Length: 548
Image 1 (cartoon, rainbow, N blue to C red):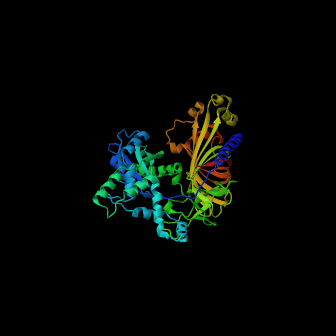
Image 2 (tube, helix red, strand yellow):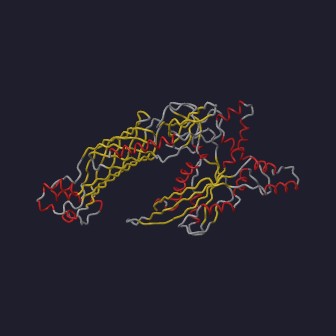
Image 3 (tube, rainbow, N blue to C red):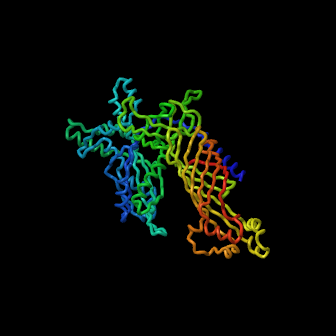
């Protein structure tokens, strides 16, 4: 086991080391993107349910919405299967989505008239305090920031959502659950300075003659605006009928899909500069879709011998107190979002931070001496974190232990007559225990986290020995819950950063047996010894952890 953990730690270090060799040139050039949502109809009874569920989704504040006429496309096919990227691409090419997006940006009317009000408003909304200060210094005035809206048109995306594999099932309690697979296909507008020039040439003015208007409208109709594929993601989720059923699964699927798309589309990752320290703060917030525990990576800008800039990663931080910064920048009053540093060296003012989404989930492998089982898999989920580094975790633990037939004989043979040993060593007994709980993270320094925790769970015995099965009365009609031994557990875990996201940990805990299951009682009564059952015990565990 020691060799196993050494190998895991070594592999983790090699992976992290390989990642570090990929040099990034991260720039603080984030601009707001815009999004149109299109739902795939399949021509079945679920079409309206899916469409209405998508329309009910709160899309958040990170994207400006381009409300183009096309919000549904029909691709016939069995909903049990996904339509696939090829079919979606054909549907996109058959639609004039790029032109629809362009017309929305410039508010083009049926008579061909256009205006730049929406574009200017979005340009102003995209500007931050530094943009306002720069405009004042250049003596052009903050109102000129509206012109920057032209640069935002190229950040227009279409997300096509296909919901497949919609199925229902019932559990033992006759509770109905619905499973849905969300398939998202993202396309970006092919917008260039040449297309922008064509739009301006086709601009209809109030004093244009009818002939000029007709010519400009004809020219606008001939503008070709393509859409390029950017990313594809699929995610399956489920929801009970009592919790909203199909609609709830569709809404949850969108949120999880968006998270994965952000990891694939660099332009969707928020970048900005650290504005202040103690605590770390930056002028981003709800307007950029920032949420508590969202992860960012900090970079220091350097220059090579030729004066070319490059960036060096300095560590990871998580958003804690998120500012509501929705509104126009004024040059100084925008609120700060606060962060807590979870790894790396000193992060200072002026460093660039870039959104690096993760699941906030840690997976640990550990070996325990004492307690219920030596081999343990633990999953922790970060629910929230504050500016002082105090964190709340949900915990799930699965442990495994096994007594081989020969080990059973060694343990209990001395209590039995020689004749009773026949068949005793033919099989074995294995234990699988599970526990769920809560952990509270405390970080005295960024590289060390103390986590006191409490858990509750059960330990289930599986007997592989025919001799013991028969004599212990395993064919009892007791319910599954009565066969399990129930326990409570409390302890302290200490996590040490090796090279984030790789950590080593040690843990001390105490297990209290609350109720002995019927299997344990039967075996202990048969063997006249408690060695095969579990008692209150103190345990020490060590292992490795990787955060995803």
